[in-house]
Image (tube, rainbow, N blue to C red; front, side):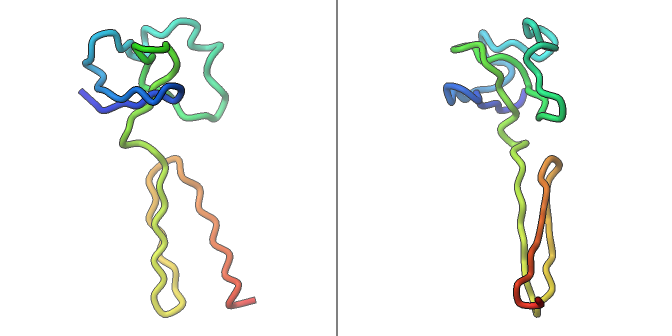
Length: 87
């Protein structure tokens, strides 16, 4: 059981909730996915749009100490650091 959130109507719930359709049961899945896009967890029970895992949203943390940047990211996040102080 995982927490999910609808990309359309902001419904939030869990994959075990009544009416939630897991990815394997989604209708016209191949036609609805974008190449290179995030893979959804399934369909929303309210509006039938894609739901995504709530904990899988890309995030980036950049910590700078003494002019050195340390980057932590989860999968799916792209990081670009532009250091204007060293131009």
